[in-house]
Image (cartoon, rainbow, N blue to C red; front, side, top):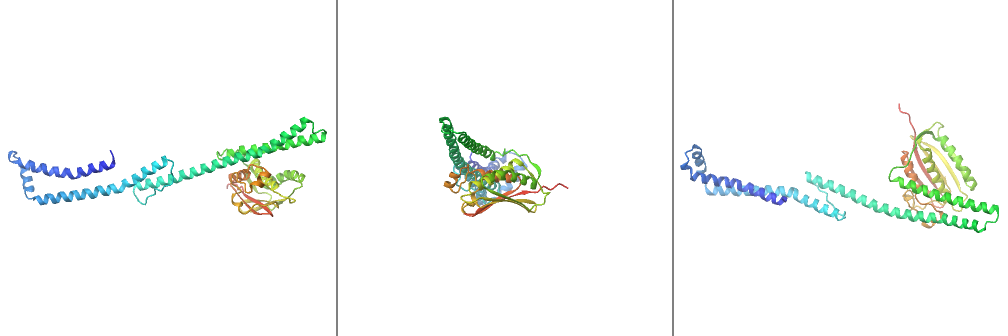
Length: 365
């Protein structure tokens, strides 16, 4: 039964029960002479003083009161129920462009406000899903392009070996080394894609340990400096920390952070003789790491988006340099999972500084 029908029936009950009661009393008074009872005598004495006008006036007052009461109840919750019904139909049809908030203080108004919060969350979720789908499409496009380049090179150099183009041991070694380097590039891309797929499921494997950060970063920079020097790149290591500072880190994942940042510096060095400065500072409760280069830099309009997944500001530059475009989003996630944060400053044509902080370990007292 609809609420409107229930209210109409309630109105009828409120009106007609008193009227029927009075009418029944008058009818009984007509037969009171045949029923010897003191009750009917007293009732007749009370009702004999009532005039017809008084009865009609009482009935009108009763009707007016019931009407006001029913309308007050109806206006109190039926409009909100209609709004909720309309909102539910809109959501069923996939339309989230409506508002259902209410200024009232009753339970139905609170339900409307809760429904509005649900709508906003659904709208945000739908927007995120559309954005994620667009990112996935872009990621597939980037990976397909970036895998095609090393595959083409591997295919070409392999055919050269089979056809006897590499007719000397030195040339054969160059061909095999090129094939190996291209295979390493592919492996790196696949590893990034695998880690990227774990970002949303929070399945990045961590093995956190208490580590002396001065020793860790010094050892790590020594390892990568040898490879960089072979490419003619200078790496300068500067440490302003106390030698006994300890942080809780994952050695492997934090190494991935350094590799990605340094790899970007190498990738976008331009025509400059690249120099990378790796510096560590004390930042109160945190250790701050700055990795600065003198490469091509990042355009001012691109700076707010460098940590977004699959974002590649200069498409032509990035396509030629390679890379999936997800490296810095992975870096940001790993740093944040370590309880830190990361940011970037850059001047186009002069270089870029990537900075991140790690929380110091403090023993519980």
